[in-house]
Image 1: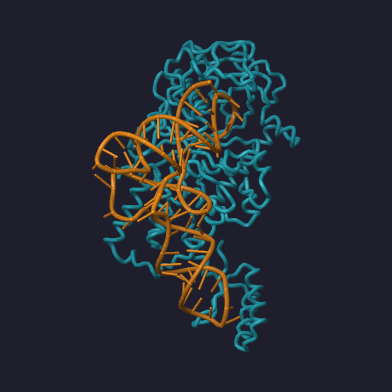
Image 2: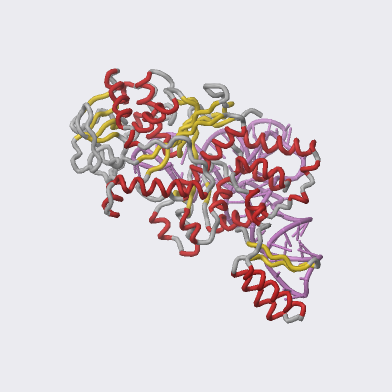
Length: 463
RNA sequence: GGAGCCGUACCCAAGUGGCUAAGGGAGCGGACUGCAAAUCCGCGAUCCAUCAGUUCGAUUCUGAUCGGCUCCUCCA
């Protein structure tokens, strides 16, 4: 089965045909570096990692770009909102640049722990101001902009296809809510900022043809994606929340600047839910201690979970479905992954039957290529329980199966050996209380103890 | 006010107009063990929120109702 992916633009599954044979260009809206990535962010990055691995499994050379948003932007298009970079900067008494680097490094660390492959290019917004200005100039030349004392705006009325992907009906988009601050200098509510002007309190400032200021939020993705992937490229990813605003605006400014198609396939990852809704600080605080799932990868690790258990959990829900994240589901994933690691290569009957193996392999491949149906992939793999099959598809799953199963062969430290000897002696003497106490000691050190007719085996716990 | 999504066993979660509604975890039964843990084997929804309708036949299509969520505002 040819690789098929769901394109948000057409709302249909489409066969993936790249622009250039054998190559796949991929841009993922990425890191905002004013705080640690939370597990919800990470779910989306895991999805994108699976996508790049599936593309490669299908033989494509992948060029994957993920931006680093290190410019803070105002919450609203006006001047009244809070800027998250600036806020973090004040909170931690560091410059915005230091904040950005710090959290960028933290994110890369999370990536590695989750076996998320580092994208080939991770451009920083602050290092591409020139490219952004160039695009705004192109837009200006073509008559798509207007300038007020507040900012240079994109005039959405000039782009008839505006809001096409999000299926926005602009006439009914007029917000009724009073918590949204409107910028009175805008011509249309949907117009958005390309370049902010006259914001003296903003810490990051650059000079531009329109005056000192800083870029609007959306322009960085247009500038950096086109710089590294070309004016038209294959796949653009992000969270579903980006569909109505961010990606809608990216399409508008990119296509108006170049005059042709920006992205061929749009893919969006759904949200991770906590406590029945999108995760938020207030919601987390409302939850009881024992029911509150970890919200960052570090917290997850501190609470004794393996990062790959979280990755495995992500694989068990489809990327286009919301996923409930609970302590219980994380526990379940953890146990499930441990059992995968316990798969016995010597009992792999499927591996010896070439025909049956080919059938099984094809089933998995078909599921994987059907819009990344990873829950089905995992389901099929679990039902076969074939070590060889797990290993082959671990190239996509990224669960370190070969590595972890081999680790069980390692030599035990002498302190552990001594405990085992002592316990064996106690067992020979049928001194069960002593034997049990020694076993507790071994378990506390992180070892599994198993007594069988063939003797006692002790293995380090993997998860 | 507008747009859209979802509701499958105790939990997480696939799926299909009609063969036995995946898979995982928990639970239960058994094997193993001195007892355990781990592991292995077996069991689990006559039913897919509710109510109508379309259909020879619907969990899967349509409509309504109830419940939950998301977006329209920075957001994965």
